[in-house]
Image (spheres, rainbow, N blue to C red):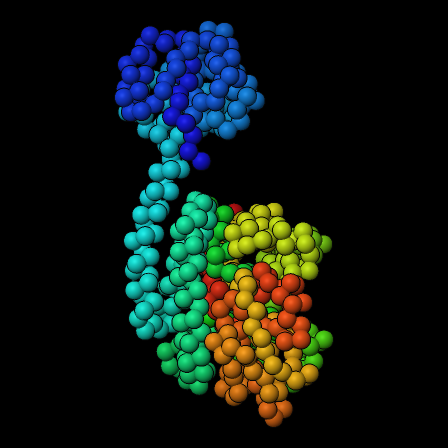
Length: 522
């Protein structure tokens, strides 16, 4: 918010401030000098000011004693303490009551101008700079999109778009956000073509030039860390998008050095496939072949019931020796409290402690069924805000603090992201088709608009178990969600605007892998 360019300067030596006042007025500010605190409070009750400069050492009440009454009249007005006192206690007291700036006399006019400009015009100046930066980068991003990109270029582009989405939201740049959304829509179409073309090649040639996939997370990120440290915390936050991660990352900067990498989720970008891929190091077709008892076709059976066993087996194979594994999946507050009680014992022992947090996935699923959740997480910006609020008070944050306290490194990642869906895509299928909104398996399955979905006939070439003859898979692209012709209005009313996953978009597929190295040991 840009405040008015009005200054109320409270100081018993007003005559000495005349030169300062003239200089500020030359810079476009309106300055009122007042010698007594009570008179200043009376003025403040009559009109708002853009900023208040306050002397600490005045006859009668000290400047610090006025702060409470100033805040009661205008809680948002910035206050700058301008005082002769260099006493550490005074400075600490001022900081403790959240003074916005602290200047020690004698001050020169440009010092005062700098402090005032930052507080009164800082938001506007930053927004202008952000707009200039984005406009310049927007042209470059558009040009990059028009070239033929490999997976590295896609990762860089999508990572930067996520950062811009967070930055533009926080600075309330409506027009620029619309330009970014249009760019993202074009990116979706290009990305779908890229995945349809490249994904089967990645699976057919695992030794070739392909990105890290879900099946590589443990081998490429967790195991190298485990070879250097006896104890590692491995965290999977279900359904965490890149832009959500960007809002969480600053909250960890004072405790951890953060090293960022990225990987691509396997398809479909749904928990039964993607998260099993992480913990087993296997594609679904390989799980079905090697562990048929752990892979069921029925949708009413959990396909993620054996993640601890998968991780144990994968680590044993990769490390050539058994690795102790503690696995905890958290879905309720009670789960979190129990984890915090047990975690010190887990982190005191060698091996891997693996934690799966389901809150964000539950939020995105529950949002479609709950009107209150829908309002709270209405769009991507609101979802990011809610994610940040949850994280700050979550068992995950407490677990990370415990890891930092014990000097235990952390790998934090997600199994898939989500996409804000607005466009229904009509599909035609027989009754045996699966019910998912972003991916479907079924006999004689097709989309009315081919651009709305990737159609896959050769399931094993996409890492998936064979089904009965004639069964194919549809993967939604862009912001589409699947509807049947007979239920078009019902599905539109129920699911338009939902955050869904399972399809092939950058938001669902390109995911963060953060290595968190504690800044200090106990």
